[in-house]
Length: 390
Figure 1 (cartoon, rainbow, N blue to C red):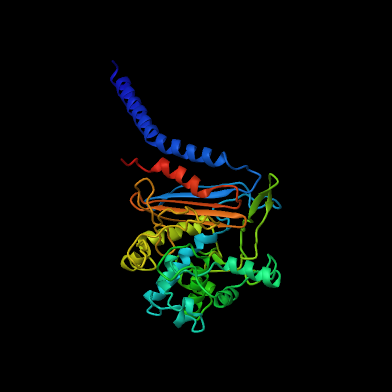
Figure 2 (cartoon, rainbow, N blue to C red):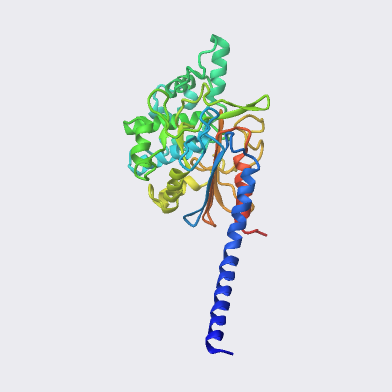
């Protein structure tokens, strides 16, 4: 054989082998990407409200995509910069603000409502900051108190006249008793996180929004994340919430409780939340040791494991089942994989963050429609990445 021709054939064979090898190495990723795209394309439409999804592994983004539009008026496409109302996803930021204040030496986890709010009624004077963080405070639900006040004196709050944090505090002060003595049971408490937001403001001498901006958002370069207060600031690149009514999606963006802050008042986007994920992974705000209490599942006063209340309601995800909760995070594993996670649900929005600690895998889904289930979708995505456990 001609030596030059033989050499050329060898080069071509080597090139073909390398190309095949590269294609083989890419194919699993391409297949996963296609499966994820099919999953979200199957539950959304390009011209309707939808969602934004980001998957990060080992500190790198492996998928980032928007599906649908921000609202039915402008039809602007959802992307990584679209800001969604986080709803209860907010609670992890409120908890971090408390941890930063503890780091600063300005607050202790065992400080009580009696010290923070000296005129608080007897049923709650022994409630601690830690009780509030862990949802074992026993505080009444402020939405129940709003409903009772409305029945007694006529409607006071509406989407146009929204209840404010200080009004929540006043409702709690007028209540005669809590659901249970602090630390004796567990019940998801928006009331507790509204009070934590007020404690952040009272302890820091700044508003809740100012403190979070100065100590969390700005240092992490989360430049488009804000604590939204109607009439005081504006949300850029805003997604508006939608719900299905008579089979059609209609804008349902604000309710009478949309103005409370510590329990659900933050707007953010995929780009900024990637910075949040990085900060948690690298312990950029508090040290790994200081973060440990947040990742310790709460135990009741008698040392027993808490359970969701037996009576179903909107905030009761798993009636009667055991619950693992730290500071602003659920902590129960998924199919044997350790994780920290939280959902958000409010008028027009559904959100979720899932952080699988052993695999350094984070899935974030933000949706501006209530007929989707981001938690279910996020676990379907997780199944594509997580190794099976025996």
